[in-house]
Length: 579
Ligand code: WTA
Image 1 (cartoon, rainbow, N blue to C red):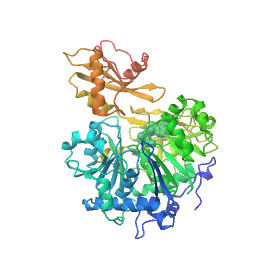
Image 2: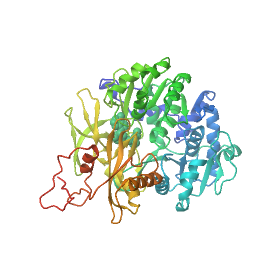
Image 3: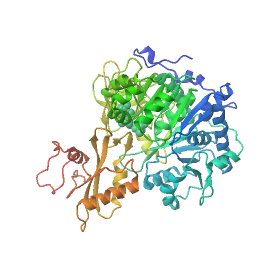
Image 4: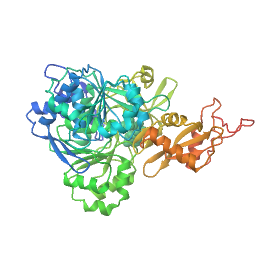
């Protein structure tokens, strides 16, 4: 079946999802399983010797894994999990760096019929504990030192967690005994491959937590049926072919890794480049060039960091094999698009999606990109700009009008639940639309332009951070009476979280307490979400209903007076009115 691309005419943008299902192989005995579509299928079709992964360890330890090898090792992981008593729908949490073991674990969990729940290694024990609790993970597969530093301190609070499998930090090293944990690599080698459990497109396959403005983090659940979207978007957005070397730099805790580093490239049958190390410009340019990467998917923050090192460095690596580069996570400034073209010989195409959409939904078509825009909806994706009042939504057809971005709720990759929270899930839909919470405008050519969030979420270096989680963590410090967290604009990271704090009696504002609070937050939350700045306030600006007025804090964070905020006559000092 020839797939339509997201070209520039209306006819090009039709895709019948039912017809597209023919692109999938399906399990030999019936049913659908991501691991079969992305790995075993290629082996069955005679491509077992093709490279599935090229993986680099932190010290450039290079491992090449074929599709046949990944099929076998992931079936062994399934055998291990089934041997531990994993039942269909049980959650397996994973706290691993980008590595071969991450792929083995993910595809092994899917083969065993489990739910894969990857976690951010930059999180501290607090956020890890809440996610492990909410997901009710029965098994955890973790890097040894990550586990010791971040999970061991809270393990006593995780009654659902029955088994911990640890991966030694050194590649190929055995691990030896570690209290209450088992050696993942040793178990995998010693266990016979298991047959893939017969899942269907509706069976839950993975859960990713994303922050909410209030309440606990939301665990968005996705079914095995999502693999159709990953296969289709891999072709539509990146035009991936068997000989492509595709590199997605996302952190394993982010859905971009699960969807676009684990599933998408392998569903398309190409080779995925995997680099364990964190960002380093020379290393990254070196990988692009030496490993002959043809398609690269990264984030605006990473692109801006590379730009900081200058075009001269980039030009040394100008002789590369890149044919396409793309970005996701935050708006991509037009300068970055042109920079990519000049420095790397491939402009960055911006793409848009969310944890909830599960797969890329909007993208700039190669050759027809509009720098600064998110692009056009992919074929098969119906996107609209809406206004809502209470539960009523109205589609806005006029171009250039700002409203909320909504997608028709028929996407195979769309989330199927928030763990344990049906009310929140339902509230995300109206009239057959999934409401994204992003404010956008659409131009006359059908390109979408990002305007902002309709809520208080903070986007920092691609992470979606809920202010509430930071506020709860800092409230646990005895000095903190009240707290409000907002995003402050940052040239490199787009935003950084800033905490405004008022103190309990008996505590003194000052540098010592500021540093103590910053340290406390970092210990609890980890570097990815801890606030970068603490500012003391005598009292918090509030709405008439007593809620902290983030708008006023935001104005303070940028150092501007908030014109909207007026102190009403006779109001309690320190209280501001809402509207
Ligand atoms: C933001 C999973 C502007 C947006 C991929 C969205 C973007 C949130 C873009 C999702 C883009 C993502 N331009 N904003 N191209 N892509 N976003 O679930 O606010 O961690 O709702 O991402 O990131 O964040 P999430």
